[in-house]
Amino acid sequence: MMAVKNAMTNEFLHSAYGGESMAHMRYLIWADVADKEGFPNVGRLFRAVAYAEQVHASNHFRVIGGETADSSVTAGGVFGNNKTADNLQGAINGELHEVDQMYPVYLNAAELQGESDAKRSFHFALEAEKMHADLFQKALNSVKEGKDIELDSIYVCPVCGHTILNEAPDNCPVCGCKKEKYKKF
Ligand SMILES: [Fe+2]
Ligand SMILES: [Fe+2]
Image 1: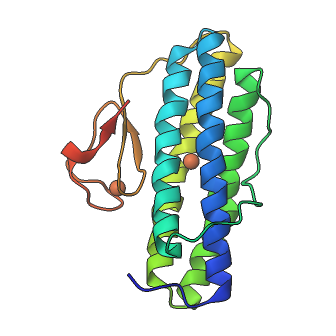
Image 2: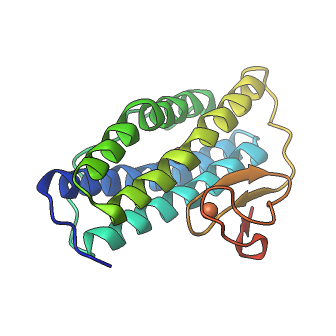
């Protein structure tokens, strides 16, 4: 794997690494809150998506080359820690920020600068995040009615973080990874 050559792409990788790392931890914390509030399936959804964010952080980290990242940038969101409904809204805000603004800009910068490894890492994250906001919105609709979300299994691709309900596809539509490799929650 080639090192990143351009300062701007490098900066964006560090920022994305920081944002994904914090999202990972925030979702694990909010999973515990959801469990305590009697929404175990929402808790499981938070844990599955936390794993997807770990995959993204790992990909960005590899492209950076393992340097210590400056984690001063966060991907939006409300930092509540009491109410699962607030936490889900914060998660939705963060995911939409990544899908609508952050990753499209980062992806374009990496493309413009001919940074193919960074481009791949941003592309994987962008595609996976598209599903997260939807899943969290469904969970929020349930929780607002005082009910846990109805949920069978959640599968997460270990290569790109692709997140899907009920059953893993034969091959990941984003990265081509095989069904057996998907992690089940
Ligand atoms: Fe996400
Ligand atoms: Fe994948």
